[in-house]
Length: 130
Image (tube, rainbow, N blue to C red; front, side, top):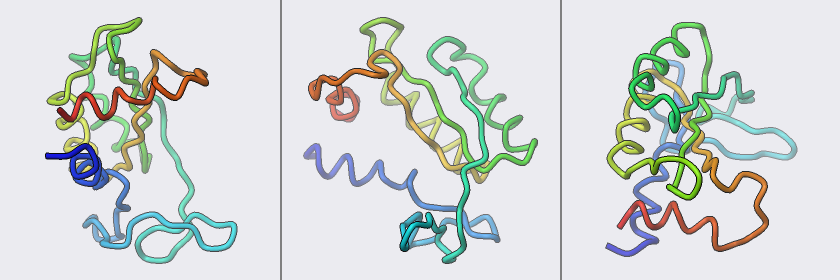
């Protein structure tokens, strides 16, 4: 499967959760200067950081805790193995599924290169899909 096809399959995390806790087909989108959910209502991210890269064994329970506190999103800290242990494709897939199951928007963040201006650093997301 091509990188583009894999990336498209992974984009389901960008869909927004409708009021009945089902995923909307339209997902998050911008209208004017507003971010809207799949129902066309303004969406404001309310969530926290989840340091998966350092606490792998706590990720699933942390996602449940985040959702129970009323958050609508979680920023998941991943690593490519450059500075911290690598987050595998299987781990990322499980994280996305856990977030979906809890009605959270999953925001993936590659921490090894936070703040980098090197375009080659973004290739991690394609490499984990191979």
